[in-house]
Length: 132
Image 1 (cartoon, helix red, strand yellow):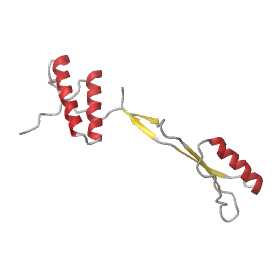
Image 2 (tube, rainbow, N blue to C red):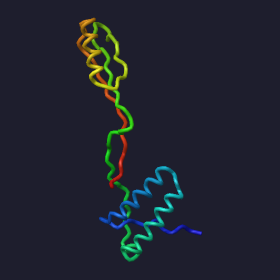
Image 3 (tube, rainbow, N blue to C red):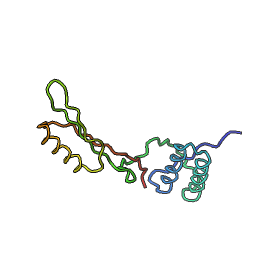
């Protein structure tokens, strides 16, 4: 038994777009049940709101996601001393949750060693959010 064709959303329809994103998310999670549910709901919506599946079929591969900082994860700040003669000093602050803590470590290290050159790193986690 062959599967019905995948329903395509109507351009500029928010409900179609929401259901397409729901299907995309289900595919990304490898959740075939949820993907099928999204297809069924999209077909129902197409019949009710648009008089059936649109005659002109289009393939939408791009969904304009937004990249945002993950609010559930703390960013990390770190500095490493790269001052020195033949080789870098190599002393490091270690990961810190606040940039002020790293700056204070740099001040203390400079006071103790007179080293003045540091490599700073910032790390965070990002989340791809689909359009709403």
